[in-house]
Amino acid sequence: MTKQITIIGGGPTGLMAAEVLSAAGHSVIVYEAMPTFGRKFLLAGKSGLNITHSEDFLKFAARFGSASARLRPALEAFTPGDVRHWALGLGTETFVGTSGRVFPTVMKASPLLRAWLRRLEAQGVALRTRHRWIGFAQNGYRFETPEGPVTVQPDAALVALGGASWPRLGSDAAWVPWLKDKGVEVVDLQPANCGFDVAWSGTFRERFAGEPLKSVSTTSDAGTFQGEFVISGQGIEGSLVYAHSAALRDRLFAQGQATLTVDLAPGRTLERLGRDLARQDAKASFSNRLRKGAGLEGVKAALLRELVGDINRVSPEELARLIKSLQIPVLRPRPIAEAISSAGGIAWSDLDENYMLKPLPGLFAAGEMLDWEAPTGGYLLTACLATGLAAAKGIDAWLDPR
Image (cartoon, rainbow, N blue to C red; front, side):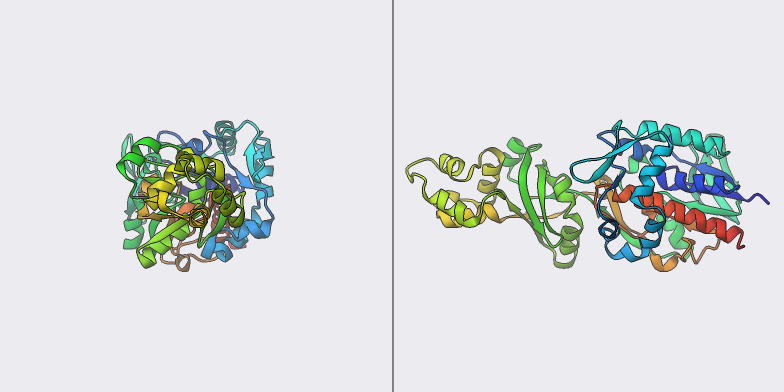
């Protein structure tokens, strides 16, 4: 017999589950609170949709921190290669960028999403926008709709509502108290892949906010990475900062303080830098000595002045050390609403191996609602798709335990 399945959340996780379940012959309705589907997906794709990553699978599968082992079966069932094959089936060819990240050839998310929605409709999936889940009803789920409140009572349901980042696109974490009231453990949501506040002086902020620091190396408990980041009006942000965000956030939480170490001249050794600076004419201005001896000017030179203070009295050897390991003290993560993604969510201990909530038989969960995080680079989207597929298979097995 055809089973009725409700999917709450019309992002990549929910849509992947709808695709799998409808292909298996179930009757599926996807409820989305926003006027259109996949809003966060579309916004992320405006600058070039990073769909997955091409690195070795063992390295890829280890990028999810403490949740890596728990996510492994889902990722093995829908690998980065499978993501590319799936996208090709929807008419989207992909290529590997110089960083190893995988992008659609058209560098947009919208063609892929349009083709995906057409496929879902062709498979009989009912797509309902402006249907906001407002909590549980007796034996069902209550929605606010343009026609007024409605209650649905499906055979099974999946919640795929995202975390708490970018709430204006639909991920507002309104679900947290509803699940907690039903006995589901939810680990506190925190910003991930986020910027950090720094106590810049007014002069530095006004002059350099928005300026990128290019060709630098950064170090924290997360390791050492090269690239660039941006000075913001509040502190620091950008892909290189996001690579350290979990480590910086956790150290702030544990110790109340954290620093990001920056190498402003990664192409030069400490010894060479010290020699080059020592050779400069002592009568020349500090700016000229820094430019000629270390190749630093503009925002890099200003950052040294901002963080060191009376840098003119520093010896060439000490200046070289500062250039190679400049400490940026961070005060706090930027608000979760500004973060690329969020950490925390439904505790794995409250999910069975099929992604069903143990306290709520018949209700499954997937995607960013779960307690995991990952760096940018295609990991987030791949895990959302993979857990959506895994939860769909779990629903199918629960409804028809052959």
